[in-house]
Length: 226
Image: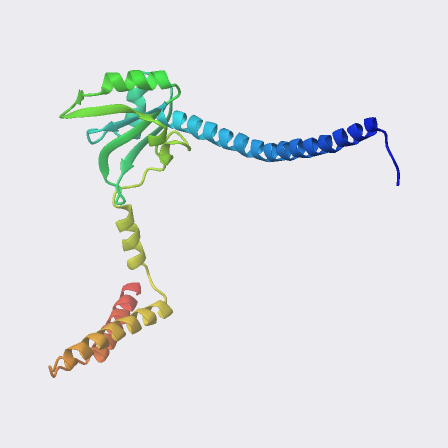
């Protein structure tokens, strides 16, 4: 058994209590160190969202035009609004069929020029229409005018109808004609079956008539070629 002087006991007790304090301090430091990065990340995210919201609410260099008279298309808009300043893009909205609906977007190179143009042209009497014009916020700018050339690809009126008509009346191969005939025969059979299920005794020899019509069509085409 070893004996230490009183001063040593004080020293040892002091050392034990000191290690406990150090452990507590180190635990607090580790927990605070783990919490700090999370708080910093949350602050950064909040700042980013606030900045993005501020940017969305800011005015852009794009103006929206409505109640435009017919005939005032991309080139006409560019020629008219270029008097205010440099233009970047012009877009005229059209329906799926390519019809004009009187709405357009014009993008300027500077925001100040867009504000002057909107203020000048709002409630401006164009022929028989009173045109409305306003500057859009960044969050209101459509995707069509954010990128691309000065003019977008202008669809022709009734372009889909013309395309469909070309496909429908194009010269078909023998396989395509047989497939089309088979589809027609199948649909007619289904209709005939439905009529007979209602109790009506109805018969129609459509297959022979279709074949006869087909042979007549082939003979006519051969005569035209000669």
